[in-house]
Length: 382
Figure (cartoon, rainbow, N blue to C red):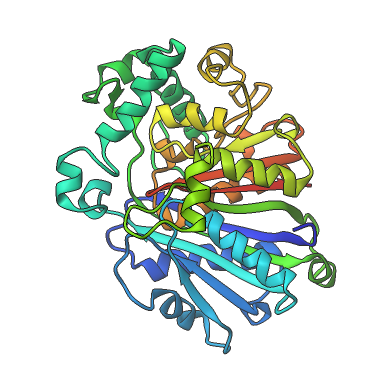
């Protein structure tokens, strides 16, 4: 991935836009990314569109038809909440194959509500799949294993809102106190309403190109994609006869999918977790932010909540996490949320993050985690 860089990024504010068509918010993000890269749409050779909950076949082509059809391949990708990271992996592979030099990656969604649109009805009624109960069991286990308390998850939400209040692209731009989080309605113990992200509308776009193309276009601040990994879980099949693959999975020690993706990403980048200056991680709810920080190796198991108390993950801390406010503040249009992380890290590295700017960001990490145990980890560096 050392020959692949990000040339430009663009976002449409995440929020509620009932009067806007998905194509409208997508085009705004795409045009911003093109302008940021100093390119025109005619320079694009390959395009990837991410969407998860939008039931609109051919949307990716429909969006670009409004910009102008130039005969390029246009694909639609759905890897659930990991869609943004999965598309970056595909873009890098396309460039490294030599088939193209410049790729447009864009994601969009208009999301009415997670539990209305994901999973079978019986699964959600029983608390399986994407539901508050399944998220709450993660929080309960974390408390039982390491001694965290309900207030620690509230502190995650407080940090998110403090950062999000400084982000013009966020749905929520209000600060909260621990007391306000704990007084919000209990959804599934120990998680309150203000511990969860809000599904919403949004779009983000990234222009990816080879280093050779970056020089040709005189890109002033190219950000290198040091690693891009998309990983699914490992476990044996329950419906097919035993095979060599199933046997291998059975004998493999089980590891969280985010941990597996992170290990591959660090190896690909030639870096370690100690080299990360800033991270955007999947925070569908407050407990998962802490769990994902640990699975990424950014601290030891059971330490994240203690470091949070010390301010290590604040914008002014040693390792800022989710300076954008995360999806707890931005909201989560899953087709766009992963690319929204990339936009934030790129702005941080360029010194363009305004009041939420951290100091000396040279290596950044983005992590997304999707339904049915899909994870993507992207490492960016100056």
